[in-house]
Image (cartoon, rainbow, N blue to C red; front, side, top):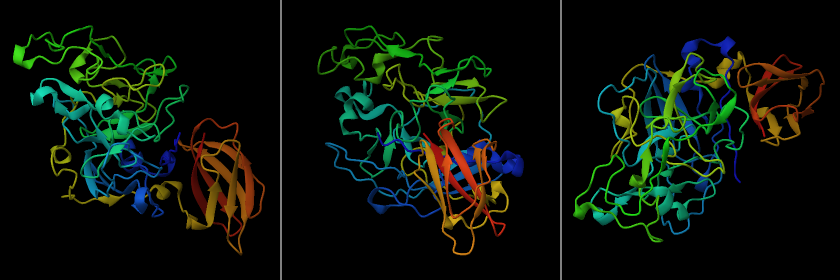
Length: 410
């Protein structure tokens, strides 16, 4: 498994709410010119924001290893995307907007989210739409992604290399945003929408239909003979088409959009949030990410052919996550390894005339979880007692500097 995740850490006490809104801080920023597949720039290159919107510049190339894609002739390319995410998402009180082909949202590493559809339907009639997970699944890589013909690397389902989807004891992190501005979480949330009841896997309210012939739609509509789909068979098993699934109110934790209004760690007053859905074995469950329709009002410049190349038409500020730690010096001389860490973290400071006097470890909420008064150019920090999460190591040096490095405890 290539699971490797890096999440921006914020120290809420040090900055204003303006700059620490989750929609601003929840992105995996590439601040070191790191590259991914084929030496292309990886993750999110820049986050800009105004009072109303956040602008995400990204390559659509993740920081972890991807490929190969059996039977898929396409090659990932830098998409040079610029997406616009509203900071004030609103429910759509009218007819809900269907999630289109192509990107329907963006993962926190700048990779595109696609819905459950393949681009094809039975007899090209547009009635029985192929399920991309079934039809294209053989071409998914170990991270469950693959490139589209235009080189747009994407996931139709749970992005297993982006976060730890095996962690059933903690609320999953924000792993993306839909283009209606609402957050997308991993597979686990609070059992109750008010934030109580412990942690559990969020269950889809969709299930496979009990049918042997494809002569009706999930809503009960009877079809004309020329709109029938193929009979259930080994060639066209149940689940081959997205119309093989039906929604039952209240049968799971989530609504028809694959979300719910609830309290989350990042939104203690509540927010509508989508969740990726998996079953008890970890297998992705329909509709996988954002449902067949969006819950909120969609930013139209983000969807459709040629979309994702917005130029901010308003004054914007550049988000700098290091500013949330206060006065931080150049951290290029500080390295931490292994990353992710399991039992110990080595902190190495390579300055020739300075050394570490103290190291503090902060969790993703800015709470101090470890402090060491040991000194020297290299330190070995025990981390086995830390919970699986994302952390900041802050080294205080003999010259009065602060050096900061992010790491993941797995």
